[in-house]
Length: 243
Image (cartoon, rainbow, N blue to C red; front, side, top):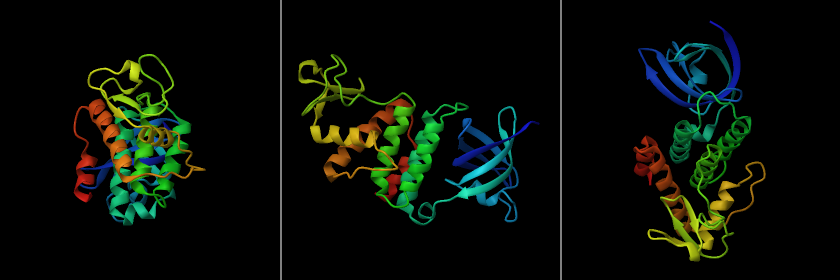
């Protein structure tokens, strides 16, 4: 089997057999891939530490048919808060599930990989709820599945002030193009969504977020995610138990 090295972040892990795992890893050079980590659940396994969620590591893989095989792994970074703070873990798990659902397997996206490292670092210090919403918005945009917030879907007019939003059509509508089923879309909500979607993780601008506006943004984005996926996300059930 051909061996190759790849830098990656563990975004999914499922027990397999007596001592193994199947892991989903987002790699810098190959995008999402799935791999078997044999024996990693044994206490003395050299792979044990690196096969945990959100660990950033240097991997060596053996190429396979349906699954790669993890041969070696050297940890570069792990995130202490995601091990200790259940709320931060729940929101980060939601982000990882969205990435696994929407980012294509086997397609490199170095810019998104760098963004992912910044997102996980942000969970260490920032509000996990806001961090997760920004991360999901940016994931959808990277996958080409984002909604339109700044221009009218029908006429292309730049949206200013309050407007309307149509969930099924996937974006904002100006007053002249409002259709049946469109709901009120406040300027405050639009500004928040645009700001989160374009958030620079390295130099984040300060955000003033009112609770009601944040809830409206979450509702809009989650409705879009659920419609795209077509089935309940397991991570949302976990989140609902904490909130």
